[in-house]
Image (cartoon, rainbow, N blue to C red; front, top):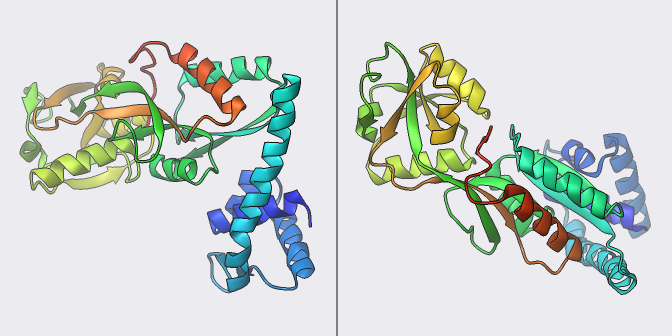
Length: 302
């Protein structure tokens, strides 16, 4: 039994899928499967029920999971303790980024951190915001850039990067295009194109509709702002975007303020504690890269 086997075991247990676990640990699916089989032979018990499409833990697997996590945490702590004594920061950081995001300051922060601390292995993981937040809570993701409807998700620390209102965006000639302001009920008779559930922007929109007993028809969904804008520009639906997203397409779309959506859509960095010196350093570089609130407005799927 070695630490890599335990890492692969934990990855499969958390992802509930061998393919996604292989992507996470950056080896082939066959490699993960082979190492898990070897670990099972050494332990004398199957750790996963492979009869369904989802890999689920057996009773033995459930018993082993927390011990495997503890062993991996202890190994990280050993390296961290030695690094603190010698003045070197080593280890591994997993950074999460909402799917389709191209926020240059985050990449700047990662590059500056890598130059300062080349002994830390960085990995980047794309997913929707809800799953990334769950990953930070479960300690499988160290730092994540997410869209959220809440300034500080429960149990986590957060740094708000952008806070903006939602707008509806329509092409010229659309029945709503002559209006600069509207209410959610005005959207009820029009198909909507929006980001999928699990994104911060969609959560803000859904919560506002539920609070006002409006049931919009979300006819189309896309993870990238550009795709949403393109669909709306072709007259297929009314786009729901943040102010800065819509502003990038003002040559094709007219942005309309939604007066009764008060809660902003937020883009934030989230993490859980700063006991890890590598994470503290990455946060310092991130704060410097992002600068004042709102300076990072760009292509921001949330």
